[in-house]
Amino acid sequence: MSDQLIRALDRAAASDWDGARAALQPPDDLPAVRLLAFIADIERREDDRRRSNATLRHEIGNALAIVQANLEGVIDGVLEPSGARLASMREALASAGALLEGLRQP
Amino acid sequence: MVTTHRLKRVLVVDDEPAIGEALKAYLQREGFDVSVAETCAAGLDAYRNVSPDLMLLDITLPDGSGLDILRASQTDGARTPAIMLTARAEEVDRIVGLEMGADDYITKPFSPREVVARVRAVMRRADIAAGAPRSQNGAIRIKDLEMDVDAHEVRIGGRDAGVTATEFRVLRVFAEHPGQAFSRAALLDALHDDGAIFERTLDRHINNLRKKIEPDSDNPEYLLTVYGVGYKMRPRDP
Image 1 (cartoon, rainbow over the protein chains, first blue to last red):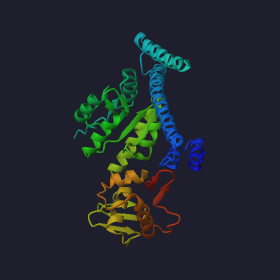
Image 2 (cartoon, rainbow over the protein chains, first blue to last red):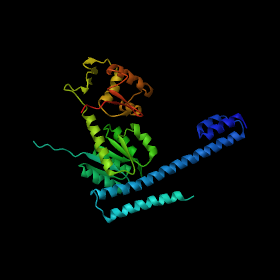
Image 3 (cartoon, chains in turn cyan, red):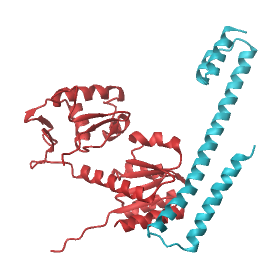
Image 4 (cartoon, rainbow over the protein chains, first blue to last red):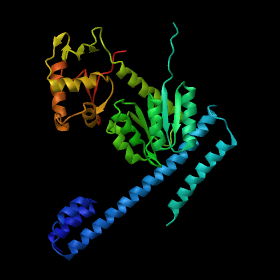
């Protein structure tokens, strides 16, 4: 295994993708080229995961905000405890539940 | 003579009607005149029509971002105070430190009572800034520091502090917003920097100002360090 590859793998083991990529410039051999492609793939997957988590946080945060704001409003006497309000809270909770259920899927 | 007091106007922009309605009810109960919009486009329209005193802006909207409304308000030069609503922790970093020019942020889910408290706090700060502490001759006065904007002079304990033009510009931003923390980026933004002041030279200007206005520059009483954020002018004495 080349010194270049060892340096890059050390950086990759620390999740230092920029450092690993820099260590592979220019790639000395075919394994180095393959490792560069592998790093790009990992980074893409990490980006996808971050985006997916952000969307989940947004959706669940919104659903819980609906429930909390309306429930507190009713308790504080600021909002009427109407059927429509209760229905919107139930819908928000169901939406959060569905998102959590989705997380359990493999 | 009859004196009328206009209710403070708050614009709420959130794409969830149930959230907008709850916030409206709480804020109205506190005596605010509240408008609610559910999209970025409607929020921009409402901003122009209502001229709010404060905006509560959800960042993620179906047709854009609450930050678009914030930017539009800043280009108008009105500098309307804004509190951002977000469920995304990764957005907080951009908002905190006031890089985007927001005054505060609240993460979802939130207690509407907490929102009302934050609205009051930001409005109080904005009111203080608008009516910055001025002495009879129109100069800004904070403890022994006096800043005469018209004469372009800074006096400390009655003597001329001898600040440079750049130091004067930097100090003016702080003096007009006592108690408000500025990140370096927010300070440059407030200075409407034309390139004459760079982020990396700001610390030097602050250090020089401290040597000129502080009784002890190692233990500043006026230009205070806000760790992790930047600097602020000491608040007004109660």
